Amino acid sequence: MSISVLEALAHFKKPVLVLFAGLAGFVGGIWVNGTYFGDASPVQPIEFSHRIHAGENEIPCQYCHVYAARTPVAGVPSVEKCMGCHRSVAIDKPEIIKVAQYYADHEPIPWIKVYDVPDFVHFTHKRHIQAGLECRECHGPVATMDRITRQQPLRMPWCVDCHTKKEVVNGRDCWTCHK
Amino acid sequence: MSTVLEKFKKYRKPGYYDKFDYHWTMSIDLDRCTGCEACVVACQAENNLPIVGEQQFAMRREMKWIRIERYWEGEYPNIKLQFIPMLCQQCDQAPCEIACPVFATYHNQDGLNTQVYNRCIGTRTCAVYCPYEVRFFNWFTYEWDEPLEQQLNPDVTVREKGVMEKCTFCIQRIRQAKDAAKDDGRRRVRDGEVTPACVQSCPTEAMVFGDLNDPDSRVSKMARNPRGYHVLEELNTTPSIVYLKRVHTDG
Picture 1 (cartoon, rainbow over the protein chains, first blue to last red):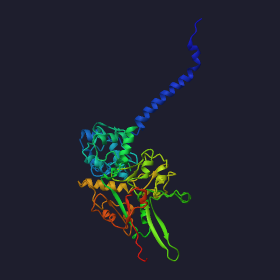
Picture 2 (tube, chains in turn purple, blue):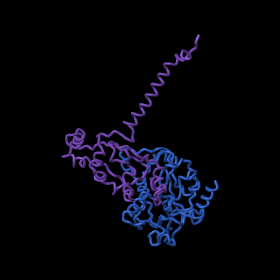
Picture 3 (tube, helix red, strand yellow):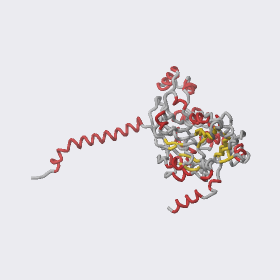
Picture 4 (cartoon, rainbow over the protein chains, first blue to last red):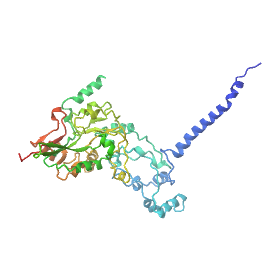
C-alpha cells in the first residue's frame, strides 16, 4: 500500500488554483496598469511621436516648447502651432485628422502631463536652462521615444543630489524649491 | 551625537546670524499707521490664508499672518488709541527655531525665519515658544468656496491640516526679485525691488521693507531712526522688524 501525499492535497487543489489565478491576474494587472494607465508613461489622446518630430525631423525642443528658456513652465504647444505645419504636412494620417478635428472645434488637445511636480514645489525651467542644462539631462532621450516615458523619479533626493553635485548657490535651502 | 552637539553649538554661537546674504528687515512707523487693516487683507489674499469661520474664530483659531493690535491708553475723556501691526518678527535668535523637534523651522541664508510645511509634524511647540503669538496652526484642511478658489496664489502652497504656518515676508516675491536680478546679470537684488503684500498695500506707507545689510537702503535709514525699537526687546530675540515709536504731541 503506497501512501501518496497528493491524495491528501487533492482537497486544496481548488483554492491553490484560485490563488494562482489570482496571482497571475494581479501581476497582469500591474503590467496593464503600468503600461497603459501608469502616470510615468500615459497613453496620450493623440499618438504623438517625439521620435518622428524631434528625432527624424530634428525639430529643436524649443520650437514647440517655446517658453522653456523664458518662463517657469516650458509650455505645451497650442493646436495652432501643430496646424502650422500640419495644414500641409501628413494631412491624410488618422492622428493628424484628429488634430485637425480639435482645431476645427476650437478645443485644446487634452494632453496628459508626464513630468508633474507637486504643488508645493517651485520649479522653473528658465533657471535650469539658463544654467546650461540640456533638456535630455532630465527628460532623457526624448528623440528616440514614440510615447514619452518619465525618466526620472522627480523626487526630492534626485533634486538635492544634483544641486549638491553642481554646487548650486543656496541650492540646498528648503525655500529654494519649496514654496 | 557629539557632531550634532557641535553643529548645534556653532548654530547658537553669537555672530552666526551676522553672515547673511541679505538681512530682510521691515520698519513700521507707528506714527503713520491708521489701523485700516489693508495689510491684513492684502496678506490674506497673497498668502492663501483660509477663512476659518465664525465658530473656529470663537475658538481662537483665526489665521492672520499680520494683525492690528489695539491699545487704549488713558481714561475717558483723554483716551489715546494706539495701533501696532503684529506679524512674525523674523527673529535672529528665534525661540521657535530651537523648539522644533524636526527642524521644520530654521533660519535661512537671507536672515529669514522660515517654516517648511512639508517637514512640519504639527507639535505646535513653536507656537508656544513664540512670544509674539504670530504662529498659526491649521486645525483643518480649509476649503475655498467657489469662486474664491480662483484667487489662490499659485506661488504659495495651500497648507493642509496639521501644519504650522506664519508670515514668510512674502518669500515668493523675494524669490521672484532674485530671479529677475539673475536675468539682469546682477548678483544682488536692488533696494525697493521686493515689497511684501502688506507693505505694498499700506496707504500711508507706514511700512518699509528692504535689506539691512545694505547701509544705503531705505529700511537701514529707518532702522537708524532714534524712534526705533523692537517689540519685547528684553527677550533677546533680536527681531528683524523695527517699530518707530509713535510720538504724541498733545502732551
